[in-house]
Amino acid sequence: RQVTVATGNAGKVREIAEALADLGWDLRPLGGLPMPEETGATYEENAALKACTVALMTRTLALADDSGIEVAALNGEPGVYSARFGNRSSDLERNLYLLEKMRGQADRRAKFVSVVILAHPNGHIESYQGELCGTLLEGPRGDGGFGYDPLFVPDGETRTLGEMSVAEKQAISHRGKALAALKAAHQPVSEP
Ligand code: ITT
Image 1: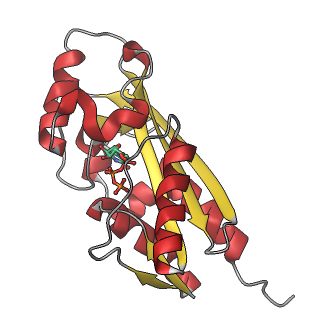
Image 2: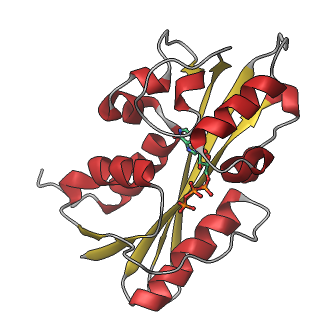
């Protein structure tokens, strides 16, 4: 089945392709298609907006992820606004901005959230989600992953997400959990 991956984020594309590889779906890139403005107040609303818009435009199934990081000491910010935190326009600048806001802060707890939506061209939607709790370092470590990965050490781990391979990150991450639930719902039933 043809599924358009409705994201402009190359890091998400890599994780989605790797997680869903065994389903044998024909994953299509967004190409030049425009994405809607993310006007929703929740991850769920924004993921549905992206997936439904692309499903309607392409008349294929469309898969979108809306995600973010919620920092305890910042009252859950940046949350749904993680991609535009401090109006900074690159991952590097947003990481520096977050480090600056967290300077001297003892409570370094943070949580990643992902909502993955598969939209059918007939308007039906399937929604899956996952979370990952951890702490923020005082400086970056590792150059893998994307976004806030180099600053974030998951609970029970010693390395940042930026120091892990895609497969290692996937096994524990917010997006890995959401995609595993989607995959389980679409796994062909095996013979007894
Ligand atoms: P699309 O909307 O095109 O999918 P985006 O990057 O704008 O791409 P979001 O609106 O969902 O996506 O923003 C999520 C932001 O949260 C993302 O840009 C990162 O800064 C951060 N983020 C989400 N998941 C992350 C992860 O697994 N690792 C690090 N940062 C992550």
